[in-house]
Image 1 (cartoon, helix red, strand yellow):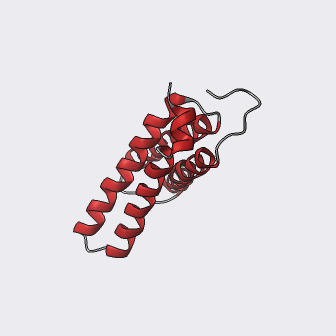
Image 2 (tube, helix red, strand yellow):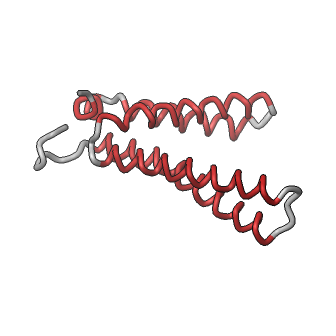
Length: 128
C-alpha cells in the first residue's frame, strides 16, 4: 500500500469506478426485484424474493470490492478481476443469443476493467 500521503493512481480510481458500476446495477436490480416479489404477482413469491436477496448481496459485495480498490488494498484486485471475467463470460452468452451489440459492449467493458487493474500505476499499488 502506498504511503498515506501519496496520491492514488488514476488507474486505480478508474478501476474502482468500473467495478462499482455493475455492483450498483446488481443492487438496484435486486431491490426492484424484491419490491416486485413482495408486491407484484410472481410465479413463486419465495423464489423471487430469494433471488432478489442474492442479487442485492452480490451487488453490495462488488461495491465493497470497489471500495477496497479505492483504499488501494491488494486483496480487492482478485475479486474485481473475477467480476470482469464474469462480465466477459456473460458477453459470450450474448454472442450465442445473437445480441452482438450488447456482447461487444460487455466484452469491451470487461477488457477495460482488466486493463485498468493491471496498468502500471495500479500494479504498483495493488501488488503486495
